Length: 283
Image: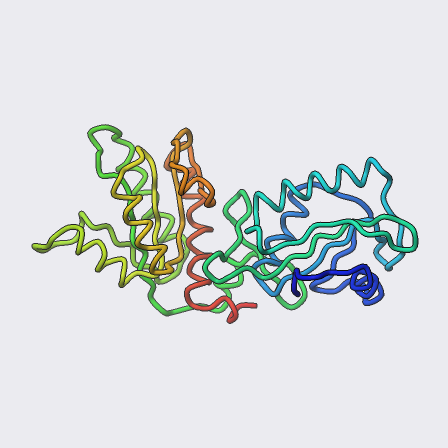
C-alpha cells in the first residue's frame, strides 16, 4: 500500500473491501501496545491501513469530537515513535457525514527494517496473521552463517560491568539458536592497524551491535561506517547514557543490567538475522 495521495474515495473503497490482512477497522482507539503491533507488522511486510470509527462489518460509526482529538494525538505520538516519517499518513475524513481517522502505513525501506516494538520484538504478517518475526525465522530452520560485529567500549577499568555486558551479548546470540558469529576487534589475533582492521571486519559483517555505554568515540566511528555499508544495526546502551544528537533519533535498546540486555538483544538479533537472510522467506 502506498501512503501517497490517499483520498476520501480511497477510504470508502477500503471500507467496502472489508477487513483483511492489510486492512484493519477499529471502532475507537484501544491500547497503545495493541495498535503498535499492527504498525510493526504493516511496516515490516507490505504496508496496511487502520481506520478508526468503523465497525468490524464495515459500518461507519464515526468518532465524537473528543474521540477524534484523542485518536489523532495518540496515533501521532505512536507513529512518530515507531516509524520513519516517510512511511505513514495520518488524517481524518468524513464518511457518510461521520468523521473517521485513518493511519496508512507503507512498508519501510530495507535499511530501516525491522520496525521493533519497545520490547525489541518485531512483527510481520504471515498467512494473514500477525506473528513475531523471530518465531517465523526460527520456523524455517535457517543455516546460513551471519557475522555480527560488536562495537563497544573496552574501558573496563572505568566500568567493570562492560565484561558482563559482552557476556550477555554472547548468551543472547547463543539463545537465538541461529548461526550468528559474534566478532569483537580486541579479541582478534594478529598484527594489524586497528582502524583499517575495524573497517575490514565491518565489511565482512552483516549485523553490527553498537553499544554506547560510556559514550566511546570509537563506537560513533564504527557505527557511521556500518551505516554507510548498510549493515543491519542494533543500537544498545545502559540506561542513563546520553547519546549524541546524530544517534539519539535511532531506536536504541536500553538496559539496566546484563540480564535485561540479554533478554532484549536475543529478539533484536533474531529479527536482524531475518532481514539479512531475507524476511520474504518467512512471510
